[in-house]
Length: 147
Image (cartoon, rainbow, N blue to C red; front, side, top):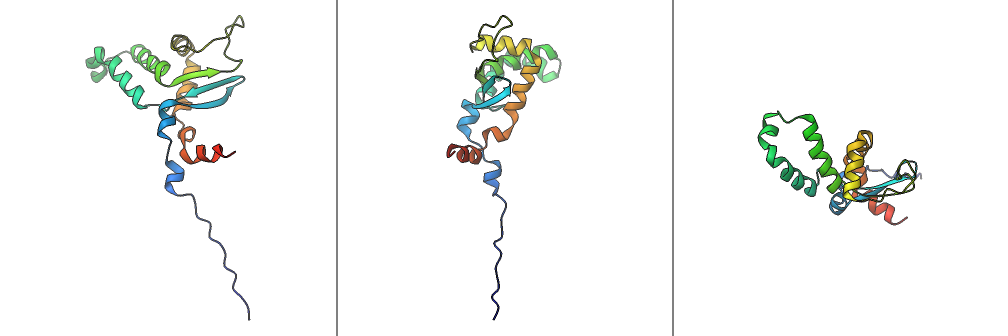
């Protein structure tokens, strides 16, 4: 008599494991280590509630221009960058955050705004990080908490 061996069927992760995010982390930020040599950033999710509220407040004086599509790119970038400095890039650490003369760049919203305004590639990097859903994935965070 032969016995039939049953193969265990491996199912893919469920939809929640693949898409559910940690809402608190989206708002309060997640540390992303090593974005460049010696640079770590605390990044909140792009478009979080704090960002939306601040954007609405800052866009209000130029709302008609914004709605008509006549707001200059420079004005829109300025508003977006102000929002990022207050609601997206929440902190940083690491020896890479230094001035040209070697002095440490301590995080403040004002210093953050200055860097995001003067270094568009850094700003773009922060935007990219803040839009990566994996940064805020709930199951990924729960799994790494046990390590």
